[in-house]
Image (cartoon, rainbow, N blue to C red):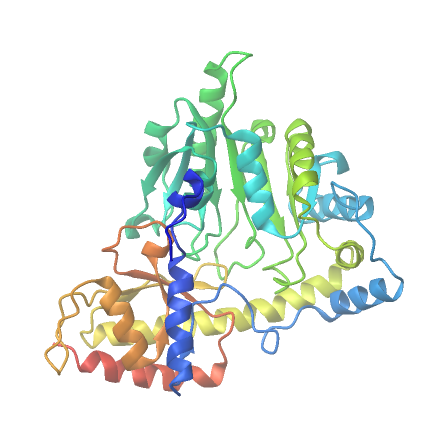
Length: 421
């Protein structure tokens, strides 16, 4: 086929490593293999259904024929419900004109980039993190990448952020974080906020300000003593410079329902509305009406989250403890104790090991392939989230995990590890 020249953007975009891995998984399944698929940042609705009250409200909304175009910034009753939800749960005080509804978090993040970032602007983000590298490329911005490490549970520190702050347009923070399932501690977030405020105080009235894209899509899913913190509650002056991203995708296992929102300074939200009106990435009318109704059902939300979180935490803790047992047996594995979300950060430092057939696992890609072929274990390497290709760390997601699969998965995993020298 003739090579076709396309836009510089299209030519520069990298293919998704997760998609490549997904293709490998499908091929193994086609061949009849049993695969324990922990790659998907999604929920199996048969294992984790959405709240019954939300489902009932969606069905009712369709029966009432809420099937027309919604308002460009979202239906007013939903924006008001979002305001009430945050006032009640986090003490955050926002008006309906400071809320933008969209079809999940992705179009909102893209729109925040397009609203605040020009070509050549500096965008600060940590690696690993979800899709910040791709959104930065989409805006032709300058990548200011922080190499997050195990020592800080793969979260950026203020000391790492500080050198990049001068002249930057956007700082991307996600807590609890995808892919790590870890959280920003209070002291570091406070320090980062002070850096942002100090930088903006230096800038003149005609200069662009530095904003924080604060993705808290997983904030309700914390475990044990882990607490979620946000910039505005910690440092109220950050309200002028923080644009939140949130929605129902993760807190209610409603990834396919497609209702998300941003909230922040009214002037920024108004420009986001203008851009999104041309993209058309609206949440469906019926789902908006249903979500507006459900967000006021405090008891139902509390009941759902109690069970939902317990089920997620059980799986995460089981896998964590299983890996720690393998570690005590001398296998080159490790993990970070569960903190939040549906993810576990795990390690397979197997590069350079030799199989019983004499084949050397030359790099981390070979390790990933070996785990898939020999253990039926499918997990996503951190280099799919912008980390170095040599990173031996992985994201494990339990959103499609069935409890009855946990014990046989570990049997196959230990058998596979025992074959390596």
